[in-house]
Image 1 (cartoon, rainbow, N blue to C red):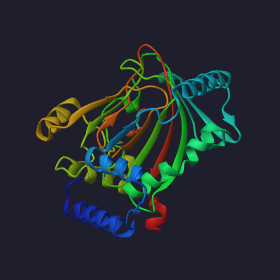
Image 2 (cartoon, rainbow, N blue to C red):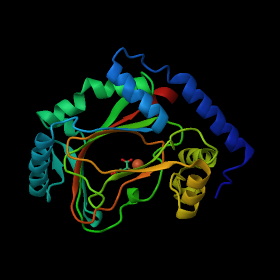
Image 3 (cartoon, rainbow, N blue to C red):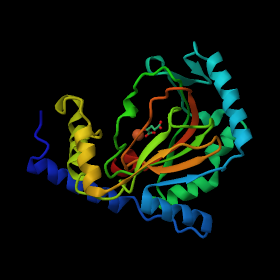
Image 4 (cartoon, helix red, strand yellow):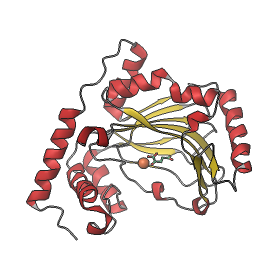
Length: 274
Ligand SMILES: O=C(O)CCC(=O)C(=O)O
Ligand SMILES: [Fe+2]
């Protein structure tokens, strides 16, 4: 295994990070007060929850319709050339490029408010890179995202989730530590490990990307930083904006499933660095 803290590696990580922030450009300056309100909450907390963004009943019936549709597709591997990912062992179904579903779903993925928030919060070069319909069934199996992790170290990763079911503590709420998106000393070794993983690959780092936290690490980080724990229980129609560079996890559903749409934003590394 490579030594993550050798000087050359740390230097390469520092210069890549510097280059990233030099290249991404500035955030958009929005004139919309609603956008600016969301963005200031996001800057402070890393999370902003907007209840009733979609009408509750409409969101519920959309969720029910999609639930039946996904049941009908349970043996299909593809729909309109798109792969349907069935992770039956953890009760997870994912359909990428879900904007191809006409109507309210397509409009959610094209919603200019969401794009403006992403660009004002992060930078103008951030793009929607994944548009996902996701369902989690309550089969009581722990999934890989059910442990605390960050999606990225310093690379922007920003998500807009729309719940299409009422989400309680036992039906897979999104779980986040408020304020953990900010710079802090615990991030640095994680970022260096992720840099090593990206540079040398799985083999060199024994498959350990370094973005997850065990309970001992979590206890230490929470104690030192005093982050507030937020479990996002909310009704269907709730929109959640989140900077997933902060510490978060999914929750294993117990009593019922969860359906949601997720628009995932990133700055393309390929465009920046090649
Ligand atoms: O499904 C969830 O609640 C969150 C999953 C997650 O870790 C993510 O979207 O980054
Ligand atoms: Fe995540």
